[in-house]
Length: 248
Length: 202
Image (tube, helix red, strand yellow):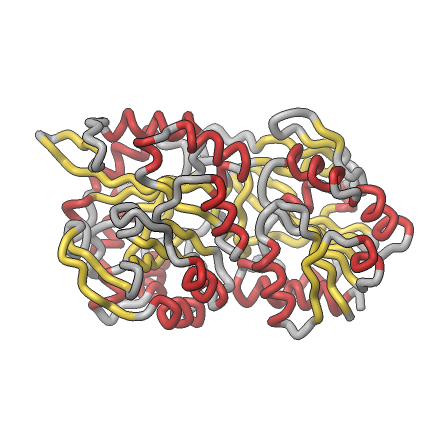
């Protein structure tokens, strides 16, 4: 049986790991290579490492640091930050990335998704989708002023060929008040590719609630690992207790 | 004992190299015929589409070379993910393409209407033969694939994985061992499996 994935997310500003709250107020939380080493020693299911300022600052993620992070990892690693050409993807796969996470390019050049999926295979093309609730409906947050409804956007990117969706509720980011259950259930009805759900986990009850009230199979988290005593294993032990398949 | 990791422009050679080096074996990432011929083991990794993979092997002149080393000279071979699929008779990804043809069967799309595709994540394998892999029965490995290898002869199957239906997770036929999952990404179980492969065929 496929196991539930608990995925630590390392967000990077080009120099250090940072953690935001509702996509604002980045707070320094450490060194990416050291963190990767710790997560590897804890045998986590997977790791994501994303330069969240790369696109905004019009640069690429630092390949040397990516290489050093991946060197620590004997588990799958997804890398994101400023990816908008096939060469970018090739560079990341070449240093050992298993998946590449795209975001902004999906708005500026949607056909890039298809080109990338055809060349490298859908399985390594992940899209990060940031969602904001407006008048009781979910919309996509982006800087191109495109007002996509979430459900429309998920259909579009699936048809274009993405292999996985990282779904993030901006209002829940870093707040540690629990997951938006409703959002997940709406998205999972239309998603045919796996979803990694992100945003809101602050204690073990939050994860129990998410996995009880949805068919969620993968969750990405950061704050709970930076700011509490809980580790990915603690979450998995709790999920095991409620009968979810986990790798312990 | 030298391990040749075949570089044919299809993904993750760096991770396989890292795993083999971690286990203390000398390894080389290569598509050079002399280096492949002088190695003791061949590992064919790979991520991506079947047709592209065969195309790349053909362009590099590796199809006959690898077939000669593995089928005629019986050099120990480990195929991973796409590297497992390419040893099939045929692949159906994007277009019908002939594979290396070392193990009879075809590579077809996973058909699970109620499940998300790709089959992505950690899943436990059920070992179906009595070789070194039996120590890994019910261990979790990392899978990521949308196509699966429908193996013709049951005796070539070493392990299966359940994702709605049962799919081939590993193949073993004489000096050939191949896994649909990624041992190089499967933490201690994966490293230990690669080590067992290298020891078994030493």
